[in-house]
Length: 116
Image 1 (tube, rainbow, N blue to C red):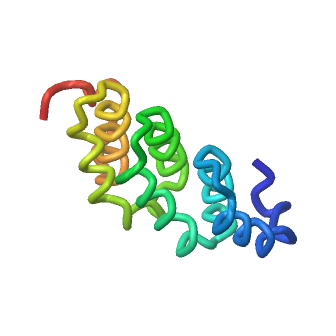
Image 2: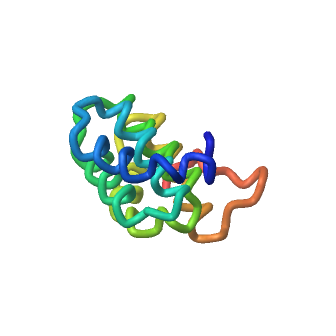
Image 3: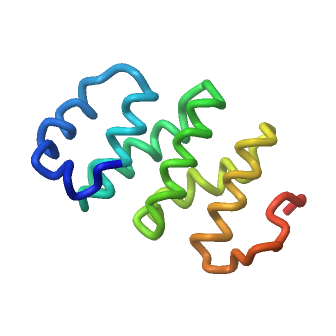
């Protein structure tokens, strides 16, 4: 990602986040905006899509983006917790991993893939 080099396009990106109909594009836009310090626009989008999108692949992409946001993802904790108890194995494991990271208890080798 361009990170700070994308700053001149932030307003345009924010506009596209509100209007683009592809959830895959929305994830990337939201992640870029959050990395530009505009998490107040990005995290609600990621949270809502994680909570409500019917496609598990899209929801997994949301979790991946939230994982890369670090502590900026904290407002999404309820949706992340829900994903951690998903019947979908990939969502469940990614959600559990992110919960461990956000709660500062993740350690390499620590099993995130066990029943809670």
